[in-house]
Amino acid sequence: MSTGAPERNQNALKWKTPEERVAACGRLCDHLRSGLGFDCWEEASFPTIQSYIEDYPIEFKSDLIDDADRARKAFFQRAGVNGMLGQIDGFSSPTWKFQMQNICNWRDKTESEVNGNMTLSIADQIRNEQNGDTETE
Image (cartoon, rainbow, N blue to C red; front, side, top):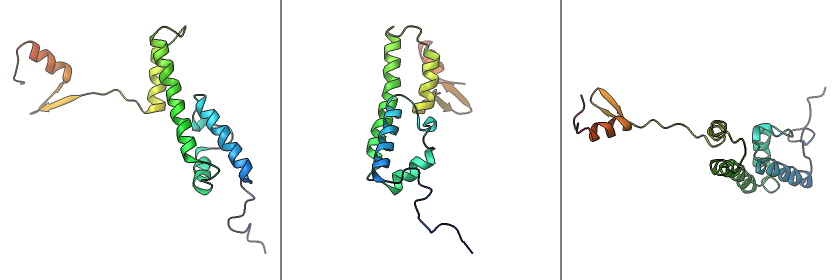
């Protein structure tokens, strides 16, 4: 009676040889540098990528992948700068902001100060100071 494949066999590996793994890592890095993310790499899912980084650190070098991911973020940051300078026809700052929120985990910041039972935004505090109000109700 068969109990399945021997433990740690390589039958299910997507890339079986070191050469295949190095080439796949290079394709992943190219994909990231082009501005695309892990979740849309058609060759493998993110959990698969993580397992290759853990199981084959020589072929799937985490530092190369980290560098490529930073280049992906820089790609979008450069696009924002170029768009703000008018160098990209049809640049959509709301779309760019949405992309940055997703790619770089940017979030709108709400800064407030709690004073007793009242919460004042920073803008409210500045207005109060300009109007000479030093106490909050």
